[in-house]
Length: 196
Image 1 (cartoon, rainbow, N blue to C red):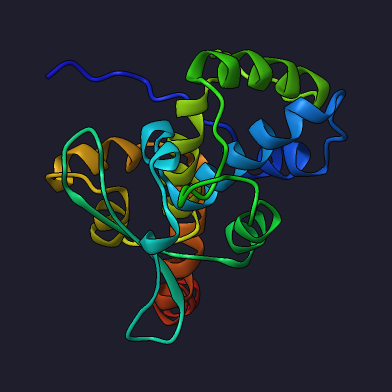
Image 2: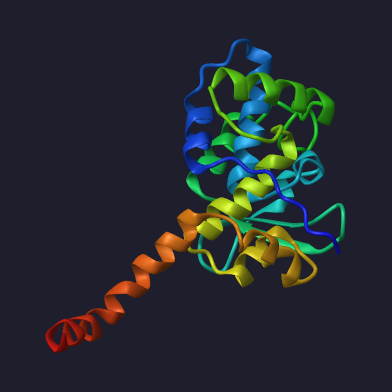
């Protein structure tokens, strides 16, 4: 399988987008569901088919999205953090059916996202589309220390090799990993410094 460079935006860019004032009300929904995807890893098709019955309280007392990916029919279980919870609450009662969000077409979302990225002054080499949010989730959560196995389960990947695409990503992740391991060599470094 040929490796592709998965486009994503940085955590700081997600923050910029969250704080960005939308140029028109119609952009707000797209901004919100894009951010929702950045914090859940759900693809466009999975957000579109998301219903109230997919939100469940689980064994740990937290709310989870319990669903199956439309693309692969693989289970995807994601614990809801505060940001996606608030986005769900914001759109409660806006649809006439069980769906959580009144999701526009993918083409409309991608057009609006382009304008939002420009407005938020996010600089990226690759074009930002709705699917970028899913890759941002993978990158952001791996960088923050979520193990590959957990990320794979949340993203609904059939096997971990798909998730490993995100593992080679950022220098920021490597630096954080080194920050964790460096103190473990402190005694060895001190002994070495005494010896030389």
